[in-house]
Length: 57
Image (cartoon, rainbow, N blue to C red; front, top):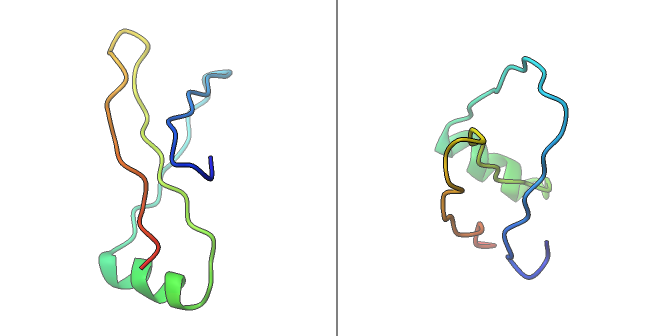
């Protein structure tokens, strides 16, 4: 959310492909004004990993 809180979402399991981008592509997208989201995918049997939100710079 806007406050940087961790939000846990679970749904139907489907095979998906994740597209990784480089730091250069990330910076270029941020300069263009794109809205970026960082996600962490974890298995139900694992505990939820702690992560920090992206900084706006």
